Image 1 (cartoon, helix red, strand yellow):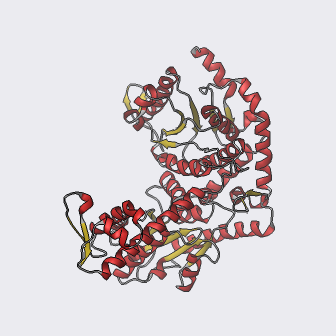
Image 2 (cartoon, rainbow, N blue to C red; image 1 turned 135 degrees about the vertical axis):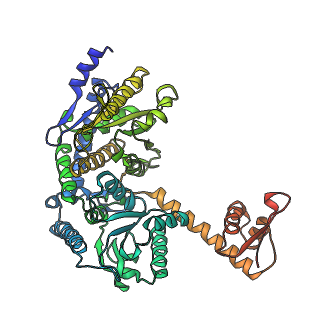
Image 3 (spheres, rainbow, N blue to C red; image 1 turned 30 degrees about the horizontal axis):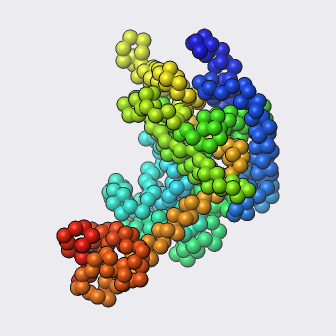
Length: 529
């Protein structure tokens, strides 16, 4: 196809949202009009299902739950007055609490005011807040944010070191929908220990976002934490960024959360349209279907050409893969659906994996994200008639052309700037695209049985560890191999896991396990003195 023909295709398929200054170009996806015609009826059914979802239907049948993240930015659309009231009240509470913190009317135990915020969460309870904080934060932030987003001890030590000597000025926000997430529980206990080591009461610095009467909710109230905010069962973790999960840390940081909500609300309005050419979420869903033949055979590569959107690919990785990566269809058939997502930032991608994208295995499609505004104020020329920002867009357009020359498909998503409004719109766009695609491939996008299976398996490993430690402590000074220990605790088939657990125990001082070398790694002997 000639450049002139591509220009005509570009004009034909460009989707523009004047109210958001947003556009979506799908012209470099090699679909046909016949494909669009074939998908009109399935898409109509997907629109019907999404409409029912927003009206309060049980859209998560496996957990028998409503799915209401769209109501978070349009409380008036919620199916029950009580839900709408809870959304509005929570937003008002977020604003009030942040103002009290900023004004110094809610103060820490010994310091004059809170200047830092430590957010403890994992998955959707961290990825969304991290995306917002990194995309919109700056030197004028009201509070400096830090995150415990894993159960890695060294990682938490690094964060505490970065916080310096200001723990007394640090508010800690613990986020867990169920209240029983072990990684988050562990981070909370590590934070408690850090406060206690400095002679501080953790409860005087702690806030929770969690489900009503959850384990965390009960713990926070029992220990008189500063405040608890709700997380409802009709909001999934990966779609919770526009609930208190994301709005509270953003508002404490000093960001415009009303702008986030307004952008999402406007994108929701546009993506409810049934006219395909005017609905960017529907177009995205169809392009995903086209690229992967409705089976996820091609990976989704997210390349935002803006440093502030570096975390967008990590955020979308969870949103897309946890939502769409399902073994069973809605009627119980094995389908093994999903789309793998990875990404980087432009033009860093030029020096990372564009080489493979252009010339290597052809198992992907790219979404480029372009931000028109370079920076606040003018830029200097780095050479005649070219700024650094001109180079950035040059690399984007050049890379897209180079990929197309090799028959690699791509989408171009353009926003005017990185602002609360445009970020809210991006979040809402992908939430809707995921929902529509899930309907097209007939899966439940709103549960995560694979995640729960992983948690159960981790629990089984820790139970094996407890049995191993109990045996070693009962036979102090007697070294045993992994094989001998597996037999001793009546778990001979678990010897590999027991070996790996023993290696970790011996590498750390916490449980008093030592290791004596043998002729091979598997003949090593482990004991408690």
